[in-house]
Length: 141
Image (cartoon, rainbow, N blue to C red):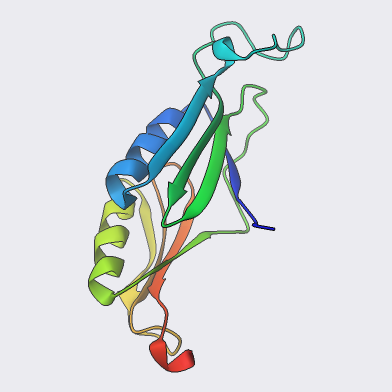
């Protein structure tokens, strides 16, 4: 029973997935636009001009699925109160992923040694998504 995060973007879901593909090697599984839905949305659900926005998208990052869409309701807010946690195999991978995701974003905690990881850092990417990136400390296994 996997737990799979679902993010709502403010019209830039496709750009975010392109960014995650470049930064993390994400594999896009599918992108469906509102105009391609097999069933038309209820009247008033999708504002005019949103037909090319993303109704549903899915990608995998390191074997985990991330799903997302563009919020056409105007009710989407920046993600708050959580971060996506990415565990990578080694210290060099922390720096690669961190630096790629930090481009255009905000560093909260630069990568460094912690008591739980030989390398760990926190940031918010250019799309407002929080990330925690670290190596699992082998001594805790």
